[in-house]
Image (cartoon, rainbow, N blue to C red; front, side):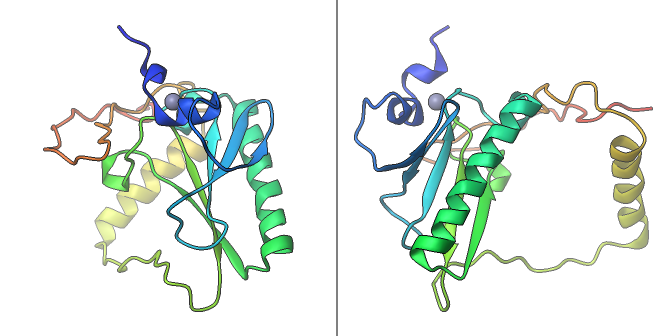
Length: 177
Ligand SMILES: [Zn+2]
């Protein structure tokens, strides 16, 4: 099976095999400016390890990712004089993931910019809300998640050309007690 990272544009960026505009680099991540940015200074944080999502990283690696985010956000607020920052992480096609390589978009926000990160609040009925509350609370508050580093499911990652989404069997993300 060919290594998924061979053709991955973000691995090529990380390996400096394609030109990019790097603004930050350490031993675990590189951040480059998006050439089609949402706003001035919009950056893409790329873990150097080819992983599909945050669940494939160790706790220490996740710390490295967010420490880098912290530095970049600090620089953005100091240097660009932006008035806010959004971090955007997309996992799975339903969330808009288009790359097989995990990314975090770091978007400086300015007054009256044209970025829209909004949703319409939905009304869950009492039973649905209770079910989500009880199951998540049970999984997260009362027990460690032994398989937290396992892949929760196989999303079909669509790169550039959208195609029919396959129906993928949902695997349990948390242990059932
Ligand atoms: Zn990659």
